[in-house]
Amino acid sequence: MTEMTPVTEATAKKAPTLPDAQTITQVKHWTDNLFSFRVSRPQSLRFRSGEFVMIGLLGDNGKPLLRAYSIASPSWDEELEFYSIKVQDGPLTSKLQHIQPGDGIILRPKPVGTLVHDALLPGKRIWFFATGTGFAPFASLLRDPETYEKFDEVVITHTCRDVAELEYGKQLIENLKSDELMQELIGEEHLNKIRYYPTTTREESLKMGRITTLLTDGTVFKDLGIAPINVETDRAMVCGSLAFNLDIKKILEDFGLTEGANSDPREFVIEKAFVG
Ligand code: A2P
Image (tube, rainbow, N blue to C red):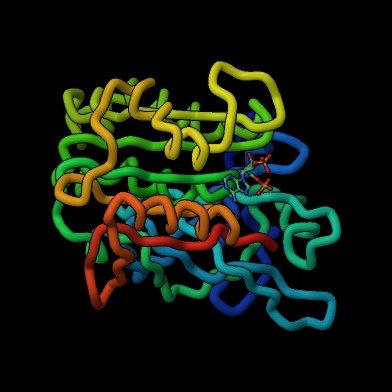
């Protein structure tokens, strides 16, 4: 695992002139298949934690090659952070995985998305359900004081194949709890209420199994010592593969929750984790 490299004046000059160009400031590789990076933020860009933007590079034909990426940093951060899979033959991520601090990246400053507080009705407990890089929007929402103003309890579940794939989320949550700025912004008492529930499906770990199974057989509630999901108190946001989203949707509906949208806030919202 390489440490994040800070951008220097020498590397900053490498940024080419692109439409909507921003500059990479940090890159961190987590596994052979996962990396995160930080990007300069356009001064005019305002977004709601949980939203996504289109980012990319110029393709071989000279045209922008763009994909939707959830912003993983909170809306108050002066830079933007993204968390990505590396697909070896993926049109964008096969190239994007080689970016270095100082390189340019295209970022269309038009944030959109449904994993936003505005799309949920008030409640007491919020669940964030993620698989793989679906953790990204929750990395933003977990660092947003609004999450803790709106909910008394925050449960984040993250299911990955292997233990190493959990590391980005694990470190983020550990840092959240120990970071002085976060304690000031959010309050230690709120941060201590975060319940983190990581599971793996293909490598031995403390908790194994798909979160869908652990929800339906009640294991999650037993492990965390909390009441089952209830339409009066619980709200949820979901971000994973299409199959995962459909399975969780069914489970949440069985608990009596209904799907909301920006224009029609309800008890849960869903977004597909984007792959490039
Ligand atoms: P599994 O290993 O049992 O397929 P992927 O890398 O394929 O996107 O999967 C990421 C994680 O999400 C894996 O742990 C995978 O479990 C899990 N997963 C994939 N599909 C579903 C689903 N429909 N319901 C619950 N978990 C799922």
